[in-house]
Amino acid sequence: MKQQEPEIHVGVMQADEVTFCLHGCYDAPDGPVSGPAVCVLQQGLILWNGRLHARLTFTPRSHTDFFSLSSVSIGKGFHWQQTEEQQFFGTLILTVASGRIGVINRIGAEQYLQSVISSEMSAQSPSELLKAHAVISRSWLMHALGQRSVLPEPTGRTDAGRWIRWYERDAHRAYDVCADDHCQRYQGFGRLLPAAVSAVQETRGEVLTSGGQVCDARFSKCCGGVTERFQTCWADTSFDYLQPVRDADRQPLPDLTDEAQARRWITSSPRAFCNTQDRTFLSRVLNLYDQPTTDFYRWQVRYTAEQLTDLVNRRSGLDIGTVEDLAVMRRGASGRIEQLKIVGSHRTVVVGKELEIRRLLSETHLKSSAFVIDRAVDGSYVLTGAGWGHGVGLCQIGAAVMAAEGRDYRTVLAHYYPAAEIGRLW
Ligand SMILES: [Zn+2]
Ligand SMILES: [Zn+2]
Image (cartoon, rainbow, N blue to C red; front, side):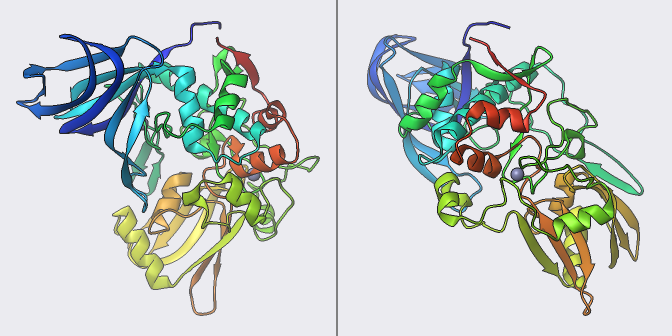
């Protein structure tokens, strides 16, 4: 499996005008350039130095050269969205994409990962957690590069009584990965964390592998005590390395596909690595925007019958009528509901999978689809749930606790991906 460390193309931003500054000497179409520059979209092409170009490449002569970009938007879709100046090593490429100027950074995979781990993780995270994440991020990247030529899979099947959908990441065409949460957050090297840089260096080239292939190393915030199978959330495919794991030492794996066991599990608070209420610890390991949420291991939401009827009809676009009942049809290994029957006065429909259920039963998304349903005396629906996110693969909060308790990254990865090995690609 040995190979060269690849260079990757990261889509950083799109704009009608791009202001940047080249710190160092860069080779450009008309010879060497440096210093500030502006490119403007004109007649569907890029105007630079008085000429129009379909694509412009600025290649640094030295690996210490860097360029800065003004007005890069970060936190898209979050309440803290803002713009900032960012700095990048590697090559700057400007191209025309979807009628705008697309800014692409070509950079070595390891340097890219140093920025990703710095952007995604907190500086105070345990170093073994940073290393585990470096291996996962590298696996994710190499798996994503391998998927670029693969046709998208179908993402659902719907008929009169069934509404089963799942959501996979769409691949990009003009570049390998974007700089946003859609792929992995990449904010240049302006705020590299020394601990993140070491974590990437100390795991250089390491990826999770299974059967000679790089793993599709999924992860989520909090499993809820047991991790989920791939097929509860996405296509009906099984992966050896994405099997249910009891997120604790020496505890039996309950059968949460069984309704009675699932109810006992979700309405109690079993011991698990991710069952932590330590706010100081959580604020150290979670990103700033995640911190307001602390009820992730067990949680509850409540809707009046009218609210639920309104939500389900509006969010699904299906004319279900008044919701009369919710019934669990099928649960996955972590207790997450894969298929939920919604009984309405106009029609009854079975909805799935995991993310679609979370989307239909909340203005945003429910924390997870691992919940039990109770009716209060006034007819309200009370959903009592477990976990945060799809629950497949590594549990981030559990992994943080494992690392903080002194386990090394290999032990953490072996716990969440029991059938995977760590291989070194370069
Ligand atoms: Zn993306
Ligand atoms: Zn967990």
